[in-house]
Each structure stands twice: as C-alpha cells, then as structure tokens.
Amino acid sequence: MGHGWQGAVLKLMRGKDFTLTVRSNERLSDRLHRLSFSDGGMLRATGVHPTMWVRLWFDNGGRPHQRAYTLVDPDPAEGTFSMDFALHSGRASDWARAAHPGATIEATVQGSEFAPPDPPPSRLLVVGDAASRPAIDSLLGSMPLTPATVWYETSHVCDSDHAPRVGTASREVVHVPRRDKGAHLIETVRAALPERVDDASYLWIACDTATTRALASFARKQLGVPTERLHALGYWRAT
Image (cartoon, rainbow, N blue to C red; front, side, top):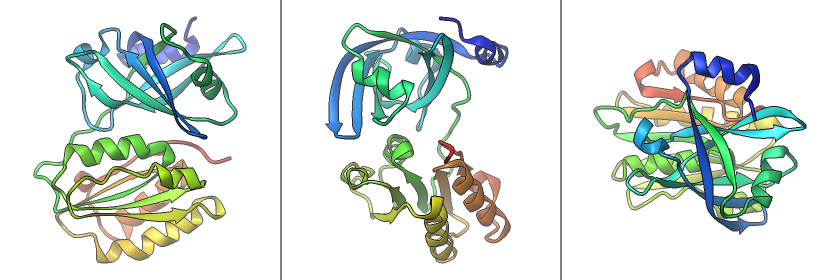
C-alpha cells in the first residue's frame, strides 16, 4: 500500500519506514486492546526516547490512513514493543480487533521528539487522558524518583481502571471527568497550577488539541512557564 501525499511529505522530512509484525494480542478491558510487535529493526535504527510514538498506516477504502500510537515497553535489544488501541468505531480499531500473530503493518517514524529535562525537575505536572496514558507511563518511568501530579481526564469508567502507573515516588493522580468538551479539565487545571508551578517544575500536556492549546497558552502567558519547562502536544481532535 502506498502512503499517498502524506507519505511523500514525511519522506521529504526524513521519515523512516518499517514493517511491524504482530507477536500477540491481549484484551485489557472492554475498550482497550494491546498488541505486541516485532519492530523490523526499527528501534536499533532510530533509538528510543520517552513518550516515543510512530505513525501506523491503515487501508481506508483504498486510501492510506495514518494514526499515531505510543510505544509501550520498547526493548531495543529484543526488537519488541507493544501498543494499546482504544476500541471504538474506526479503521485503526477495526484493524487492531482483527490482528493476529503474523499480521503486518507499515509504520513511519517522524515527528516524535522528546528529551527529559536536564537538570531533572523538582516535580512533574502532567495533564492527559486515555489517549496519552501510554506516553504518561513512559514519561513517569523515565524519571522514577521525581514527584508528580497527574490530572487524568476520564470519559469512561474503564479509563480509571487503566490509570497511569505512578510508581513509588511521591505521586498523585487526579481523576477529572470529561465534561463540556474538555472545559472542565481546563478549569480544574487552571485553578490548581498556580500553587504548583515553580522555577524547577516541568509541565507536560497531552490531551485533545483544543484543551492542550488552551492550557499551554495559560501556562506561558499567565504563569510565565518558559519553553524549556513546558511540553504540549495535542493527541487528538474533538468532534
């Protein structure tokens, strides 16, 4: 399957293509499905960084369709990792439901960039949801001794069942129900941040695009959070 104009653009931006092979599948809950992959040499070629994601290519009625997914527990030595798929209507979810060991899918690595802050922050301040939960786990795992507060937006009960893995440090997860297209999360985080942000903290935001932009703007303009202490990336678009 060709990747169309999107693939051509990614090639110009030095995107690297790989073929992934399904090793196993596991239903984590009614709405969450995990697939394990062999990486086709990807991790050795690209390296691994916290919150790393790749673009998967799906056939959508003869047209290429791409979606980005975060790597779960990548192992460069073994050339393996997993990915979690939220099960709803859509081409990516349909593919994940039907995928079996030996099935293959094409992937492009381009655009995933993140380096843990140096020096390490005094506290991580994290805002995310089920879509970014694997990335939150990766972020927290990269700084296991750093205290953290995670505002975790949940749309369903099972989202709470698979909340971020906070580890052993001084960490808390604040569950925030999704209301008013993310407005409730914005209000909750805006009220809490001024007492928690300082010159040594690090703010990481990854939820729906509109909410991410609103909170990032608030952090920059109202709280004066510098660029090197803020990472914001919209993971999906609300409709």
